[in-house]
Image (cartoon, rainbow, N blue to C red; front, side, top):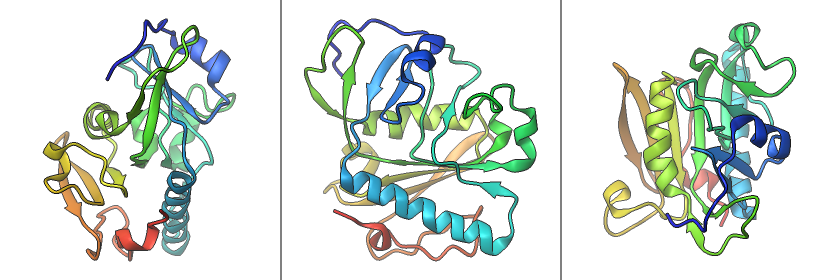
Length: 216
């Protein structure tokens, strides 16, 4: 990715200035303006809704907050904002920031995260974005490492437009739903294409295909 002389932000600065703005997250002090499109939000909403139905039907003590930030303990200037996140209600009492801010610090509180791959821009407080980017680099690489380090059981990468690099989704590029399941601290990845039924160990009764959530 290319950035134009960005001014690095601390976690505290980010929260003070952008914590309530759902289009921004922070990675290594660099502000990410996610600029969510209508199709992106429609896909994220469909996923959240289907997960909520499974939680309700299975009577899990989990919740799907409207907005939430993750503060990885090993990354001081990072605040991740997943498109969809599932939290364990029983663990929220152990979260140091939750009562004042929708911020999660402990990986044990998180059951699942989902990222919807879309276009995005790199930005800073002092310089306007100059180049349009895709966020697949973060979703397929950096966040795989961060979420595995937090021991999050499942991570979904929903690439409904086939934007990911060839090394991640193959050639030719096509819409891809990747389910990352944590095994001994490492994500084992299974990819699903249009027409495939998606399998989730966390939600074993889930009936879902990528076709069901396509809103392009």
